[in-house]
Image (cartoon, rainbow, N blue to C red; front, side, top):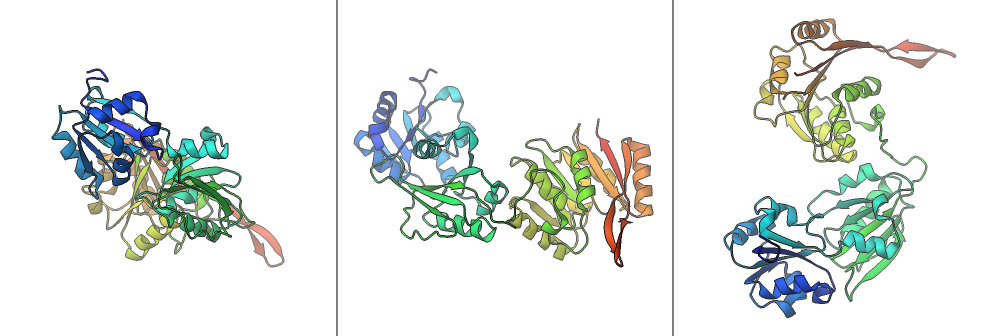
Length: 405
């Protein structure tokens, strides 16, 4: 089908309503037998709607069957701005072939915000807090950088300001941009620590210019975070060994990690920090440690980390197939390495660490069967010796790395 023949039109609309729509968008809207959209969108487009106006249910996904049931009729769907930028377009594209759709976007709120502030769009991080946790902002707290975030409601800017202040980013500039592109547009600026706006409209986004005070919590972009960034009881892969583990695991965008015997969850958390599209599952038998992993994931800005409290290898059953597996504890448990190896797809990486001789022997046996390489990691740290200082060696870690053919 051509664009004119496609039965489903997805139309971006801004706060300027029908005045901002192109001629093709106006034509599709007026010819639609039914128009789906939020109550606000339907009100904005009301002057051109000739067919049935259907407001979204509380859960957007439940509206898709109603749209599909009218396949073949001229149907229009109204969304904010760009349908494929934190929009509904991608959900509909999973159900409807592109040849059956005509997409006519409008400027996104992010584009409008950059236009108002004079910011370079390609240099700004973008996020959405609509149905997503504020903790996702934490990894983006990098001094002298900028971010744009869609707000969930009128309370979001204040919550963002409180988060910034609590993490030592109180001097950061906070721009609150409301109803962009429409007659009620308003742009205001303050700082996180001085935030006192109590009349923010529900349709808004926040633009952030990050500035940190001395001692602010900044998450580095390299592997091997400081151990004291994690709450732990001593069961943690120390930063030097962890950095080498992440290098061997070789995170790639969109991949899934199993962190078995996760302890503090440090390897899984750093895997997620490597790319926001990554996923990780931390498997930990100790309930207290499993709870601590969840706290660490929230504090370090990766609340999407899945924690499975259970004993591996039994706890591995039914989990999503991994692209990489790290065994930080329990490698000598019968069936552990075999279960992890069997779960990996071709090209998957398995990395295991051992401190005890018995575990090291299990890794050597695995290497004899499956191949791979072994490395012994030795670290010495400077410590006081009375009034003097000396290097005290930490326990050595044996690392086994294998890639599945």
